[in-house]
Image (tube, rainbow, N blue to C red; front, side, top):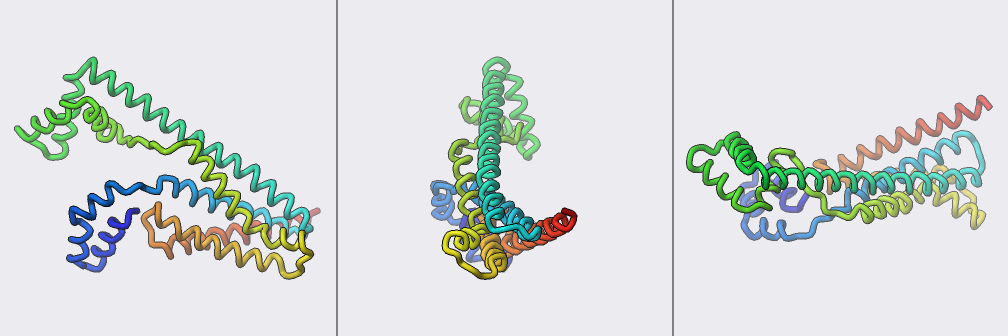
Length: 260
């Protein structure tokens, strides 16, 4: 969500006409349209959340089973590497596949415009007729859009196929996902790592729970940048989910250990 859109929504909720006008001023709109978007924020947020939640689940399960710090570290870091690489590869392939599909559909639309232009013009006419254009206004809109092939193709992609081109790099998307997964996934094993390296003695699981839940709330709050929710609601939502995962994993490990 952009700052301008967020400001406009806050103004609407408060009934603030002046703030609404400010959000719709020409200068504010122009600034937003030329501002570089954080296109990899989604990859970072979801990679981070998945990393911390899944690693926390592993630590909780092993702790519930009453296993040693060494086992916790082995399984924790194995999860960081294996799941992190798997998630990064999945994001890379997913992003790449979507872009390839968009490219294929764009090539088809271009070919159809070149070979059956009258049919494609009729599609544009039908699309804008449904938007409320009539008579001369409708024909003028069709004429303007079809006078430029690139504009024509983009209009067909958006209006007919509901597809918007994603220009972000699949490699960067995968890398951001892995880095976020690994970096935030270190939080649940941090206390155990310190204990292993420096013979630190304390209630390691309690420290891990506190660090993890605080981090989950913070990262969950950052989701408000990519979803339409207030930051504290997004944070609490992820905190509840993370807590539920931890409890389920802990008691699953405890229950299994009683059977062995």
